[in-house]
Length: 172
Image (cartoon, rainbow, N blue to C red; front, top):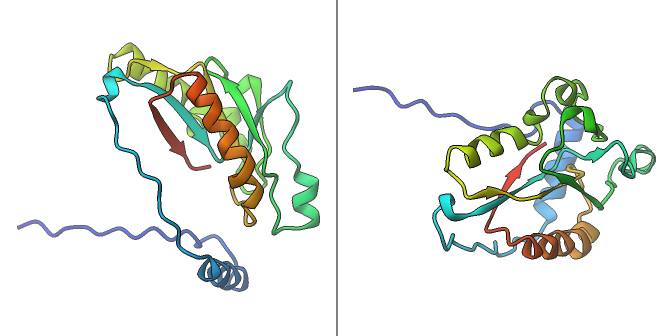
């Protein structure tokens, strides 16, 4: 009989002890909310798929995420979002997330926004199509009120316009 391996994710392992304690206490203050789960209506092979990454990526030609605001107030994060085309490459984007090594994007955009992997799924018939548009916002947003009230509904409207059936969330 094989022993089952159990893995535990420690989301705080890279934080200093005092910061870890503060973040955990902040999370305990948050009131639980119902998760709006919607089951798939079709198998993935019949779905148009969009990606949403919390990596804070933006096209080099687009407005950068506000890092100065976060430097001034580490509890604040830019609540806006950016739209990236399905053919974007690492050469087309900049990483504005202060908690992610920017060399990841330089080496392989797929580590933070797997557009090429999604295209492979489309080519292989595992999904009907990759959406023409994908989305990114600044993760580590400790005050998400504006993100949830404005950016998420705006992204949702854009995905409805593009007839997206399935969204894959990619943590940054």
